[in-house]
Length: 213
Length: 252
Ligand SMILES: Nc1ncnc2c1ncn2[C@@H]1O[C@H](COP(=O)(O)OP(=O)(O)OP(=O)(O)O)[C@@H](O)[C@H]1O
Ligand SMILES: [Mg+2]
Image (cartoon, rainbow over all chains, first blue to last red; front, side, top):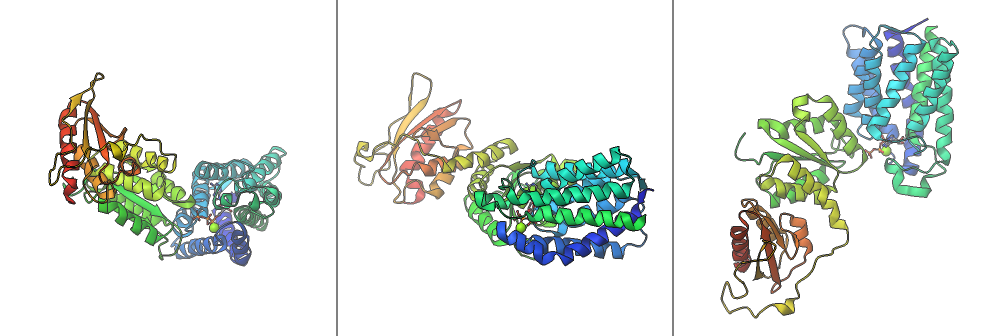
């Protein structure tokens, strides 16, 4: 079982759908510790991605091609910090996902590349109450699953669970990066919006893989 | 390269179009020879930053072989500028530096330095040094009481001829004539004028190549300024600066 460009397209469409569905929730989370635009930023970005996909003459040839389209579109349309952060994540993922089909190791490499992109761009470490706190346990869980011989869909399911736990754990954290850091101690007690959107996107990846199985 | 613009341009990236344009306006007033390109807000003019606007601004700034310093405000302004730099062609990116500087102060300091046709490194350094504007001021202030009475109608009554110190520094004093003291306009005039001399110049001990440092002196009318300089053209620079001070920068 491998994951191909069709899976990547399905992942992106499912991401757009879940971001739209959770738009107001993300806005509310960002209102509590930021400027209240994360839901709108992400929704605008993913709607633009879907519009680009719809306008393609031929289906994308590789996972990498899909990731690249998402990267450039999010960078141009999101408008907040999430734009360059997710943009760089997908850009790095596009370089790792050049193959036409990904096995479990390929999926792990893709997720690692994405996390690496976020960390490079945002210079955030674990524990700073950002999307890094969702992606780091997601990647760790994916590595663990792949090491135990799990197929790609199970690797992504593990990543989604890791992201969920990581996002939930941001509630207790005090933000030291991004806009929420201006709140200092008062940022504790709230879920980080970027960690929440990361969790949604990784769950969409797992669902697309399960549908492809 | 066209002569209209200094070799180093500025790109001001902000979350707000109005803020970027306003900062560009403030900086341009003191540096009319510098191409300053604002890139504020989202494509639709809302609050946020736009990859495309920043990319267009960077290309425009580096046209004609110019280099550019980017000054950005919060969060995504920095991240977006870095993303653009990662994706544009190498020949553009290599001529651009992102300043770690406060937005308005950094823009003004960089613009004035660029106006003196300084190179990329010097413009970047002056933007980054602008953060010190917020630090404690520790400059020796010459007491106004030490000022000799200004000769009525004279233009050189308070000035002393340049003398050479033991350490090779050239030193002279001059009395501020203009009613508003050493405010932004005369400070910018000094920096621009001194850019033509091969000398390191200080006014009351602070770097006379920095508009912000000069303004921080808070020197007012009738203050005595001590001008010192080192370098091949130290005497010329001091002489010219004393003349300009005594002439009231054309404001009297
Ligand atoms: N330096 C960073 N590193 C990693 N993630 C970050 C960083 N800064 C912000 N984030 C993530 O981005 C999310 C906020 O995204 P959003 O699109 O709302 O940007 P924003 O903070 O409003 O951007 P802006 O800087 O334009 O105001 C945060 O919840 C956090 O997860
Ligand atoms: Mg926000």
